Every structure is written in C-alpha cells, then in structure tokens.
Amino acid sequence: MVRLGVSSFDLIVVGLGAVGSAAVCQGAMRGARVLGVDRFQPPHDSGSSHGETRITRQAVGEGAQFVPLVLRANVLWRALEEATGERLLVQNGGLILLDGAETSGAGAAFYRRTVDCARQFGIEHQILSADAIQERFPQFVLQQGGQGYLEPGAGYLMPEKCVSAQLSVAAAHGAELRTGEIVTGIITDGSGVVLQTDRSRYAAAGVVLTPGPWMADWARTICGLDPAHFAVYRQALYWFALQERHARFSAEQMPIFLWSSAQVEKGFYGFPSLDGVSIKMATEQFVSLSAAGDGSPSIAPEQVRGFYDDYVNVSLRGVSSRCLRTVTCLYTVVPDHGFLIDHGVDSERVWFASACSGHGFKHSAAVGEALAQKVLGEAPAVDLRPFARRQWSTNE
Image: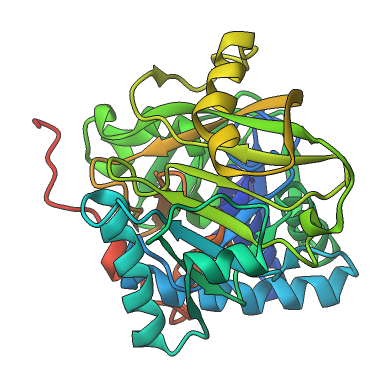
C-alpha cells in the first residue's frame, strides 16, 4: 500500500506490551515492513506486562481452548531465548492446591478443569495428597484431605525481559519502533488502513491493535462493542521477606503455586524466591474498577497487613510479615473473563486482541504470532476462532 507523502508498511502494531511486542517481532522476522507504536517506552509499568514474573501453566484451568496457545507460546519463548541469549521461561513446576474442605465452588471447578485438560492433552502431571505435599514442599500449609496438582512443565516468565527481547529482535529485523507516540485515529478503506498519531500519519496494508487497558477507547469504532465490556481492575503484588534464607524457597525446590478457594478460582498465588530474600505473592480482585492512565497508587499498610493475615500467614511457613516491595498492575477483563481476539467490525484489515482478563501473558507470544500471520495473509499457527467477538451488541 502506497500513499503519497505517507510512510507505508505491511503491518502496523499499536501497543507494544505482551501481545504487541510479539506481533511486531513475528512480523519483522517474516520480512514484512513493520511499524510498532506505543504511547510509553516499553517495557513500562503503566499496563499489564511488568512485575518481574508471570505464571505459565500448560493445563489451563480457564478452559481447554487456551491450551494450544500456551503450548505454541512455549515453543516461541524457547526460540526467542536462543535468538537473544536471555533467560525468559523457567519451567520449575507448578502446584495448584485445593484444601480438603473445598469440594465445590469456583476453586474446585478450576482444579477439576486443570486435571481434565492435562489428561486431554497428555500433559505430564501428578496428583499429590496433603501428606505428599507436606513431605515434598514443607513450606505449604495444607489441610488434611486436601490435594495438589503438580505440573513439571509449568513455571514462570519474566515479562519485562520478554517484551524487551521481542522488540530487540523486531528492530534487528528492520522494524521501526515509535515510542512516546499516541494513536488518535484508525481509518480503513478498500486499499488499506491509515493510522493517525499525535505526531504523524502512516499507512499500512493491515493493523494489529493491542492497547491493553486503553481498549475501551476503541470499543465502538473497532470492536463494535460498548466500552463497558472492557473493565479495568488494578491488582496489587507483594514481596514479603523470608524469615531466613533457605533453599526450599529457590526455584530449584519450590514451584509456582495457585491456591484455589470456594469463592475464587485463583484465590492466592505466588512464586519461588528469585533473590533469596523475598517471595512475590498476590491475589485478584474484581470489585474496584480503575481506568487506564490513572497512575499507580501506593498500597496502604493496612492492605498489606490484611493480605498477609488472610493468605500468607495461614498458608506458608517461613515467610515474615515484613513487606519489602509492592507494585500494581492492570487487568482488562471482558464479561466471561476470557479473551477477545477478532477483526474489526467493519474491516478485516484491522485485528485486535485485548481483555486477556488477567491470564494472558503466558499465551501472548502465540497470540501475537497469529495476529501477525492474519494480517500478512498466512494461516495462523493456532486457532483464534474460540476467542472471536461474542454476540454482544453496542446496546447491551
């Protein structure tokens, strides 16, 4: 696509977080003329792709439709490691815990779906009794009658390093990256797409839109949905000091963990210690709404204490109440807590991915690759149809 006086590309990616950095990387690696645009300097701490670590699981309790995404993503993460020399994916195992009293409700259902996915896709796993967990992982406090799903192939990703690596590879393959630039308009016609920013205008054969919590700004014009379908919730992450240095909190001896409860699928989760001094833990909240661009408020001491008393103190041995660090990040959530990946309501030249609902980073390499493939006319490596726009109207 060529327009006089306007820089032209095969693919423009708007938003260079988890999915966007993957799309610009994969497009550039295919030899396409690619432009990536972001309002910040990625990786940054104003969205959803920061905080040192993100959990990855192969048997995905959110639904079997997600499993092909994470399996493909793991292949791409390893290829990215080989290309950059960075350590991005650590498969130290994952443990999903279910207390004995929790035989029904959201947590038990999530646990059962995880086990069902493992069996359906042949994913290596073990089911451990409370006694077996106590023997192998004495840092966890589990009620008698409880059980755990242990997946050796689970672990964690390093989000800032993943985003940086993908952008580095994209640039090395000729992609242009424009940061600190805000997209103000996306106009499609029969010959392509025109992108207007606060600095310039660009033309492309196709656009991938991955703006994270700013998705509501494009809800009506691109998605054909009411902006209320993209709810933004701010989440708190905590790093608590260990009572003493101990190898059992290292990635060699401690898996990532998810603790299910009756009311919440993933009531409480955490990671091994990366520094030997502290471990990162968090829960999820879907009550208090936020907005993109609100800034990152500090977490009050009473909130820190409440989290420790409600979750850490009753679930883990050897972790003190001294909080060394807190960070917040944003979840963009659709009503079914799934993904929304589709082409624009008026044009298949624009594809978008947003509302990964707090469980998208592990899949992002595969989603970004598939979106780049869609725009460039290739068959996607994974099936995106399960995540297409639902029967939601702008009048809902």
